[in-house]
Amino acid sequence: MSLLEAKGIKKSFGAVDALKGVDFRVEEGEVVGLLGDNGAGKSTLIKIIAGYYHHDEGHIFFDGKEVNFNTPRDSHNAGIEVVYQDLALVGLMPVWRNFFLGREVCKKVGPLKILNKHEMRNVSRQGLRGLGIEIPSVDQAVAFLSGGQRQTVAVGRGVHFGAKLLILDEPTAAVSVRETEAILSLIERVSEKGISVVLVAHNIYHVYRVATRFVVLDHGEKVADVSKDEVTPEDLIKIIAPPLN
Image (tube, rainbow, N blue to C red):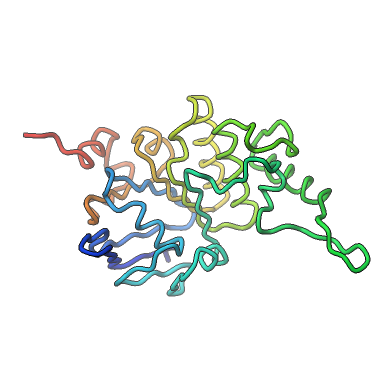
């Protein structure tokens, strides 16, 4: 049984058909590369899965049940964590505050509830270290972290809070070569824990390194669904951008 299965997903924005009956599935612990040129429909598909958009037609099944995510909170509560390029991190807040953003731990002091800073610091520090993520200090403001470090904080947060499916939108787009390697290694470790990953990226070689299967969209249609042993990176590039005759 697939962890996620989307069947016949259609979505239009006015006269523009963004998705034209797309089927998409993700198995437990699988890393799927979702590929395609700009305008292929990748962002629309992941936003439907995440509850930002509602599909016009089709069905979505998650963890064995048909679901209708009306808001991002619905998908989040089901166990889907999406890390977009903007990361949804607050730059002026420290790492530990971002780690618990929207999930703050409080303690009672008399009639009042206050943030349990000590517990949140410890949990965020241990949660990141448990994934092999090295951050100089959880008290450091996120704004002073590198792009790769911010990505790992966002991914670590999702893993720690029980994500069954991680969707990563261009996680290596604006980071150094060394940080790219760290992010790809983190994806491999996450998958080894049994968490499924959908990796959206333009760099085919980055995706090929970690994914076990590739789904290619083109103008709202699925044009390929192939396993790693069936294709090379060059084959995928030709599917996404066929050579001109």
